[in-house]
Image 1 (cartoon, rainbow, N blue to C red):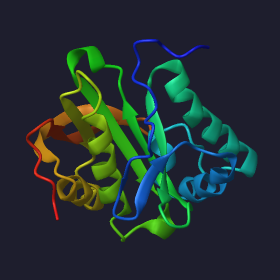
Image 2 (image 1 turned 30 degrees about the vertical axis):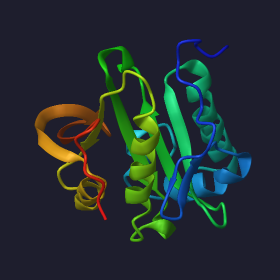
Image 3 (image 1 turned 180 degrees about the horizontal axis):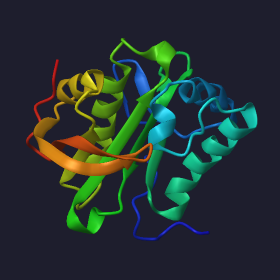
Image 4 (image 1 turned 135 degrees about the vertical axis):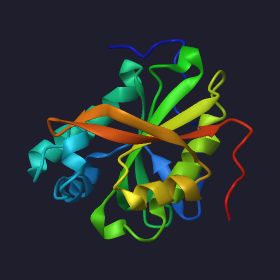
Length: 191
């Protein structure tokens, strides 16, 4: 399938911040996908199967590469800028771009957690996102129990806007979600 002509192009330069860069997925990133699949939560919110085999992880990597081609958004591999090691994944979903909105979602591999990788990845994403004409708002939906993710959002300049009751189905259950948003021109860049 060919890329949508009106869809924003892939960034000419990988977005980066503080030693983290966002790049296209490569086959060797399947090892990071296997690590993500061992997390109890990550497989419940996406297409990565729990305890993925190497083959399943490679198929997931290929699905990430197809998002931009299909015109649904950008699926970035979060990578260490110095070593190029895959540290996680981050998506910018543009299904509502004509309304000026996008949604973001991310997962940091367990071995890379606790080092503000997610914060730097979100800052990189916003720097890139604001180059997209017509994009004025990026939203994150986070379960209230996920304090690490709420801190990541806040450190990245996202503002908590409210609690959405029974917003999403996750693992067969309706779940409340916190809504966080970054708005073009309103987010101070955190230190």
